[in-house]
Amino acid sequence: MNIALIIAGGVGARMQAAIPKQFLTVNDKPIIAYTMEKFEKHPAIDVIAVVCLDGWDNILASYAKQYKITKLKHIIPAGSVGQESIKNGIMELAKHYEENDIVLIHDAIRPNLSIDIISDCIGSIEKNGFTVVVVPCYSAMMETYDSVSSDKSFPRDNLKCTQTPQGGRLGQLVALHEKAKEKGITNSVATCTLVTEVGEKIYFSAGSSKNIKITTPEDIDIFKALLKQEG
Image 1: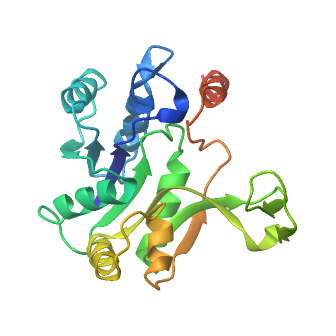
Image 2: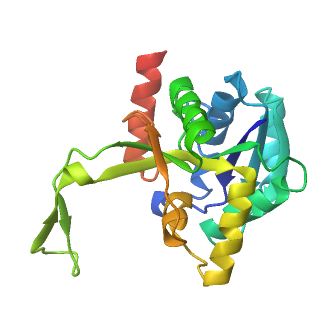
């Protein structure tokens, strides 16, 4: 069983919009609908679950009906931070599915992932366990402590830019969050960082520069251009 766990608990403050960015429309379709459609159409995905911002669950359910997202089986309440939202999703899935089932944790605001990205991530989890989708780092990377200057750089060949999906076997992910609780880790940036913070190794699968995360108004323009290119 392969499960897509879509995280839609953010409020989208950086977008400066009146509604959460995952529910903004692009070409008259909500961003989260594009995201759900990608998993709906993938033949290896059996179940979609969404961790949803409080008060938006009925809207999400209506979108699923409108866009024929038949694989959506669970709408789960979000937490106060991303790590808590993911944990809520994992622990709810653990009530319904087997430890060996695969869970792909994906940002609702990455609506342009491809079939290949999903397939490669599933394949890596099957082979290796914990996996994160990555792309090479092509830019020079500088470290700063004051946001305006730097005296240190990092070799970009040693760096990867992470995307989503990222995940593992359901039993692994349950254990991961239990270890995090034991260690007092409550606000890790992502599943991939949480894996390393508890002392585990995470493996890479191939991402794409087109697998953009919609964070700012400029990202909406990029997504529209990608849709035009593909359409």
